[in-house]
Amino acid sequence: MITTNEQKILAATTAIDSLIKEGKIFSGMKIGLGTGSTAMPAVKRLAERIADGTLKDIKAVSTSFQTTLACEELGIPVFTLNDKAIAGQLDLTVDGADEIGPENTLVKGGGAALLREKITAYSSREYTIVADESKAVGSHGTKFPLPVEIIADARVRVIRELEKLGASCTVREGVRKAGPVITDNGNMIVDCVWEKPVDPVVLEDKIDAITGVVEVGFFTKLRPVAFIAHADGSVEVKK
Figure (spheres, rainbow, N blue to C red):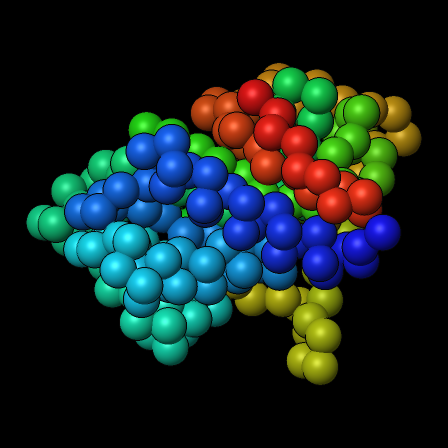
């Protein structure tokens, strides 16, 4: 049996190597790189395959300061979606997730990078998620809190509208920081939970439509291929 951290590394390594073997990661491609404890091993594995000569001329788009710093340390060239070399379109994004539903719907944003993660994912032709087995769930809404990035000045109004949708809301507080979490974009995070499971497809649109909401952590518009590692050392490829 392997630990959760070992599962994350196994899922990430298996995903990168499998995608290279299948021709879905190739030299010269434009790739989005996610944020968090499972995405980081994928970034590291990608760097190793660049270093060993398997991949060349990779152009990466980062979803957070954390990922940008990792790419700089590992020698992966980082661009923005607006750079001419990227032109607003990616071949593939590889990221982690906080929850993976039965239909490969996702909850993301535990690391407060959901806005950039969604921009990157939804700008990609293909989408891959890497995760340990604890991230696979039967439904959304009742366990891992759904992150909603909001404009601070709209906090009271947005929370009122989220409560109308049945959510119990909490402004996310910083760790080793006084006050709320502030995202890379200068916004606040409200975490939402429900008493009963919710439909992520419906709520992604409803929450995004609330004035003052910047982005919601439901990802349902582009369903990924998920590489899920299990404690027995196996890796499930969930399409």
